[in-house]
Image (tube, rainbow, N blue to C red; front, side, top):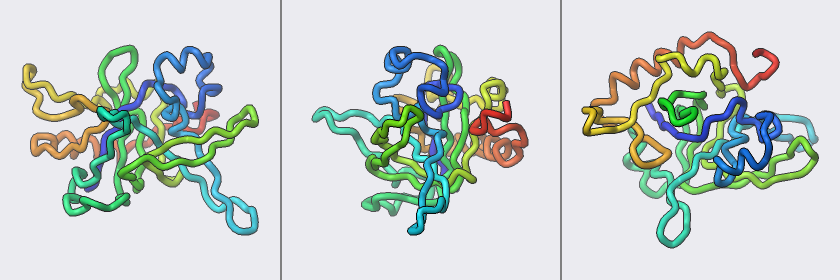
Length: 214
């Protein structure tokens, strides 16, 4: 299975600053660009007649900044089964697992995009904000709203959603290391991935993307 883990800052809704109930200054202190704050905000795609055709979620995780100041690429060829995609601009059918840690604690799954498209380089899309303004959002992952689930905050602390960090001193040979992306390509990670996929497929709780459900 194609799977990718991406780390973003901890938020409750990921539907914009206003939805979080905090000030712009508070968000700016922890979010370099702020694009992560809208990772679970659906955008409407209209057909030629002006009617809504579908809803998409453009997701963003921050890649490393290189010495020349440019952003590095997402190495889609490192995703399981994609080693031959060395020049392609994108790859489809990826399960993207969004992760975050709260107040410096353990890293937990906060949600996922099933059947997502992952781009090698950042893309851009205009987002209509609640205050009537339009903001250009960068993204490097996109999925249909029907394939997206955000875990409510109360669910994320459940131990089944813990995601490891690679640490040789502690004897852990797999997990996030020094970047916001983990390709989960280590042989030792297979059992962890198998268990996590089981929990994702059998999750029957609320979807935090619908705030009225909480």
